[in-house]
Image: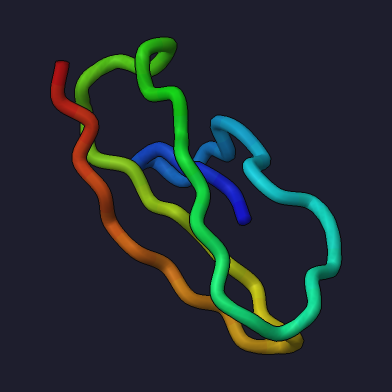
Length: 57
């Protein structure tokens, strides 16, 4: 799972491990990022999912 800025640049890798099936909760410390729109990209097997988030300080 990675945090990506709107231009497509990977800002931070949030999770870089294979996890077993289940539900997970993660918190992101957004204080080090400027206010902007970002994408959270997640890969599950061969499927990719992106969700847009807004960081607003």
